[in-house]
Length: 131
Image 1 (spheres, helix red, strand yellow):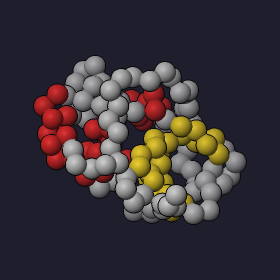
Image 2 (tube, rainbow, N blue to C red):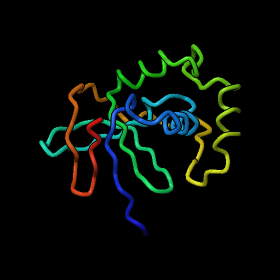
Image 3 (cartoon, rainbow, N blue to C red):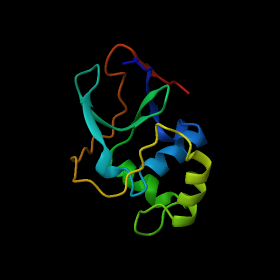
Image 4 (cartoon, one colour):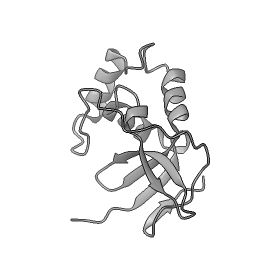
């Protein structure tokens, strides 16, 4: 197994192409897919996991931010689902990427984290983007 660099980054600071791939991977929104982990300060924080062929991302966001991002994004409809036309465009654009495992349903709740603090890198080997 190859160790990929781990990137901890805010959603807004991601390249638009990565944001599109994340939307395609999570067409029903982000809030049910958040994971929690302890940062270097020992505080629980939440992030959206996303993996590409060469990197593993932890996209920092709280439950409230996850819902707000989708609500404010014109690519999602009023039900918080990626619009069919957008999904088709992204599938055409990124359909040949092996790392995308497109979610076809809504998973069980993972848990709610309303901690809005930004965290430091959780463990050695992760890179935190300062952009």
